[in-house]
Image 1: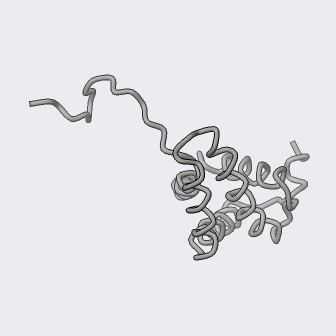
Image 2: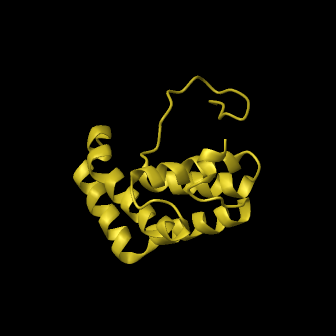
Length: 124
């Protein structure tokens, strides 16, 4: 279990701070423009999203997390993602921020409707 802690042993509070910094980095004008261009190139095609959008999103995250002991590569981003995931169940704020981050570079998943269940909209 100690192997995953080698890269960067961040507490929940530290992880939250780094996550906030990553989200802020996506909002920076130059990064927002890079993401917008990648989104335009992808044309809502899942395969193209992976080809164009994911590398840009990975680079933006790398630029932030390398200062916190994560390697400056895809592996560092994966380790950061696993760390955040490990705190999601313990901290609702981290779970919310993680969802916000994912929404920035993953297309929304639309589930087929299964009729109006509890809390669903009833047809009148």
